[in-house]
Image 1 (cartoon, rainbow, N blue to C red):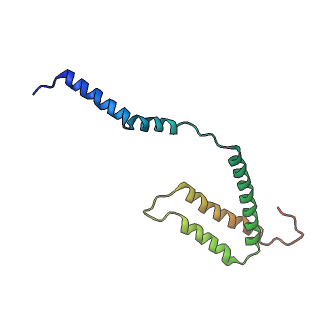
Image 2 (spheres, rainbow, N blue to C red):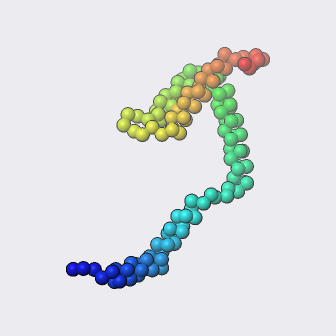
Image 3 (cartoon, rainbow, N blue to C red):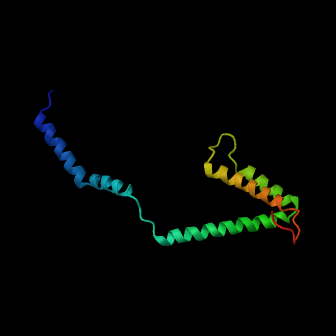
Amino acid sequence: MSADPTQSSSQLEAALFRWENEGGACARRLLAESAMPIDIPQSIGTELEHLRVRVIALENLLISLLSQAPERPRALGREMATFISPRPGFTPHTRTLAAAAEMVHLVGRAQHFQDWVEGDLLS
């Protein structure tokens, strides 16, 4: 059985026409449009900057509170960092690893100020 070249060409054109009319072209166009850069409103940038400021304030407040706390809350913070670290057989996610390291770092910074007494210079 030999295929007629004119028939296969017309079948191809019909298939392409259907694809164009049934949304295939729209899907391709939407994919191309989604790859275009999105304009981020100025208000979102402002909100992100305010969020950064609040996080810095909270970190420093946490350090000051932990510095005057007994050893158990600091140990609990270190334990929690170990708990969120990836366990054997699980995928290590970069953000989780960074969060665990930051928790340990915050506890360490709090220990630095543990013996600070009011009136001493912060160093």
